[in-house]
Amino acid sequence: MSDNANTSNESGGYGRVSTGGLDTTHGVVLYLEDISVSFDGFKALNKLSLSIDIGELRCVIGPNGAGKTTMMDVITGKTRPDEGTVFFGQTIDLTKMSEAEISTVGVGRKFQKPTIFEHHSVFENLELAMKADKKVRSTLFSKLSSAQMDSIAETLKTIRLGDNADRVAGLLSHGQKQWLEIGMLLMQEPRLLLLDEPVAGMSDEETERTGELFLSLAGKHSLVVVEHDMAFVEKIGRKITVLHEGSVLAEGSMGEVQNDPKVIEVYLGR
Amino acid sequence: MTDVNSMTGGMGRRLYGPRGWTVLGLCCIAVFVVMPILNLAVPAESPFHVSAYWVTLFGKVMCYAIVAVAMDLVWGYAGILSLGHGLFFALGGYSFGMYLMRQIGSDGQYRQPMPDFMVFLDWKEFPWQWWNSDSFLWCAMLVVVVPGLLAYVFGYFAFRSRVKGVYLSIITQALTFAAMLLFFRNATGFGGNNGFTDFRRILDIPIATPQTRMTLFAITGATLIGTLLLARWLTTSRFGRVLAAIRDAEQRVMFCGYDTVHYKLFVWTLSAVICGIAGALYVPQVGIINPGEMSPANSIEIAIWVAVGGRGTLIGPILGAGLVNGAKSFFTQAFPEYWLYALGLIFILVTLFLPQGVMGLMKKKT
Ligand SMILES: Nc1ncnc2c1ncn2[C@@H]1O[C@H](COP(=O)(O)OP(=O)(O)O)[C@@H](O)[C@H]1O
Ligand SMILES: [Mg+2]
Image (cartoon, rainbow over all chains, first blue to last red; front, side, top):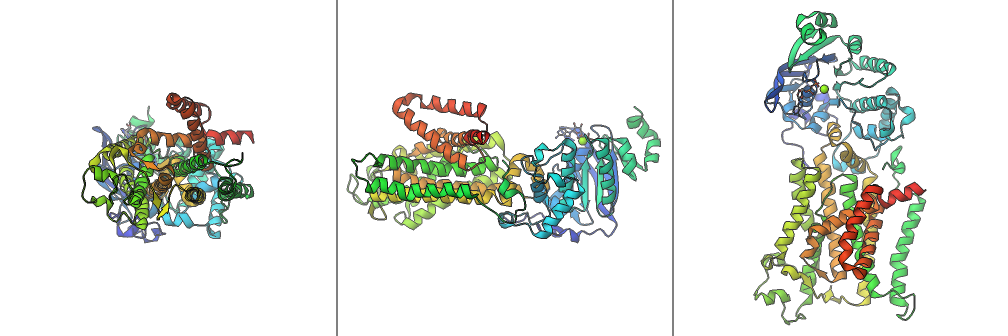
């Protein structure tokens, strides 16, 4: 049960706490360069380049099929790009790593459709996501330390599921499931959070609270939020990237983007 | 399927509550005290006497129950439906069967030191597979290593290539079928379609005595209980929760930083080893092993025991193995030609009306 030979030096401590080694000397946490992905000849991503600064909260918008989810698939190792590189910090090339390794070096992802462990309790969902040694041998014998219990309790409070800790996750409301998945991300203590349509299906109040949560996370973490809800984006987004047909159409503040004629034409102006 | 004992806190891990341990204790008494007394001490004329037939039948069903628990670990917990677990069982049986064949010595029909089938084929020396097969320890090691190694290599390639679901089931089914064809051939060196039989001794002790029979029975009972406790320990650990998470949402588990291949490979290999041990206990009690044990239908039947009892419950599959084999004993005596239809019907009814098997039924009532 050895580590994958492809693992770069940065992730040499695979399974252990090792994100401290991330080299971000140029202030950039994630750098995508000329990424192309095609499915049966159809280009889902077309020479996409993008960079995310440390502590940044970036919103990515774009019409359906623009390639937003595919971009996250590439960053997290689910899809291998045909061309291009994805750098996490200065030195870690994510395109050469497995999903588990990418998660271990500090990239957390929330899926478009909430994916939690439906048959496990809320508590167990957070326990499994928790940053810890994730090798078979350790999970056989591991017990929760009191520090770990505290961190789970704290996350439960943050995602407002403290009263539901022992509930089976499948029984939660849609909005609560979204929150639980966000909580699972937080337990991983990632440097970079990728959130694919995190407020879809949430009530206005829940959406509001989610926005506040994201704003409070920015700075400590870097966040990339894909969202359709323009009001939400306007509230939290400082810098916005508009994706269209697999590449960046425009980038800037909400005002700049809204007034960009290309953007008006393909997205906002419909 | 969430388990309340293991859920909150996780500081102290309890395998079973007081009621569970009581039931388990009663089972131990039944296997290690009541059965030996009723079989060995109570005279044959007494209505309380348990005959050799029943001892062997119960021993056999306990071997099946061990397999059912092993199957539940991979199917009920990790979501891997194997339709080839009969192969691991048979390989354990053949490994130990070699030793039993050597123990016949020159008491075979041909009065030769080599097993009868080799004499019949006019072989002058043992083929390489039989190296050191007169050693009990060597063969006992093969019981573990052969199924384990095959499962590890198979699993390594299958799980790494992310073969899943129906595809994996079909490949496992093909694997056991191919092995059956291989073992049917005389040249393979394991007695062709007759397999191994006519055992005389085990560790130089005559095999067909009531005492030996009861000893094998008790060892099988201890193995079953040990397997159950081991499986329970595994499934109530964080490891077990990762397994169940892989079953429900494997991708999420990977994005949480777990290398799911290692998890699947571990439980898969362990399951195969347990099946091998069950096979090794089965052969001396039943007195025969042949390639029929590798038939695809046998492996499918294992899955049915688990489905009938209730996946992901460990106890359920033990009950399932008992119930289905009880029904089988009845049918094969009363209406032998209808057994396979009955089995198919049981499977359909359970799938439609009892998705959680007998255990689901018991939970509903309480
Ligand atoms: N696995 C796949 N196979 C084929 N086409 C795909 C696949 N994944 C995505 N696509 C296509 O790629 C395009 C981009 O999809 P996606 O990234 O999901 O868009 P978005 O998330 O921006 O709505 C869509 O046209 C979609 O149909
Ligand atoms: Mg999408």
